[in-house]
Image: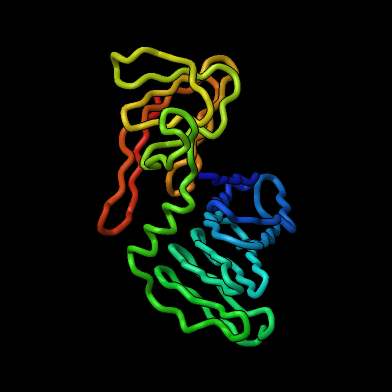
Length: 238
């Protein structure tokens, strides 16, 4: 298993499945807000969890035969066998074949469209839960350690960055230990930052949680409804 996750300055996240290749052609931010983003998927599968900006700054995903402008926050894009497919979980994408730019379709939430090598995008249809599950499994980050690099259940929170001294324990009676990057934290975990310590967590949804120096944070709940796919994350800070 070989997968990657990229977190940009504006908190947008790209997750790459194995055997995927992506090129960031342009990514500019100002004061932590995205101004312009153009990402090229050369092959494979990616998930783009795009942060929202006040002025709806564009986020463009290109493949060798198609171009899509994201108007939302959560998309899967694949490029295989000279064709592109888009699956929209949240938000919308305006999609076109590069060779036929005047024929576009809008891919709405919970729908998918297919762009053949030499034809306009197909009329969008609703996608089925099995398609979403397959794409989530392909793009879920992996953690090396006891799991030997197998996909981790990301209903847990992944520690993406630690600076300074940050302590962690599970339950009120748990023993404090020094937090390390790539740890997967479950509900019931408490974090405490000492001195100039900081920590950044990434949830399964791609959302980022940060704890600043001198902070205390307890993960109360991390869950996913198996029927609707809706996720819930509850934290308590003291």
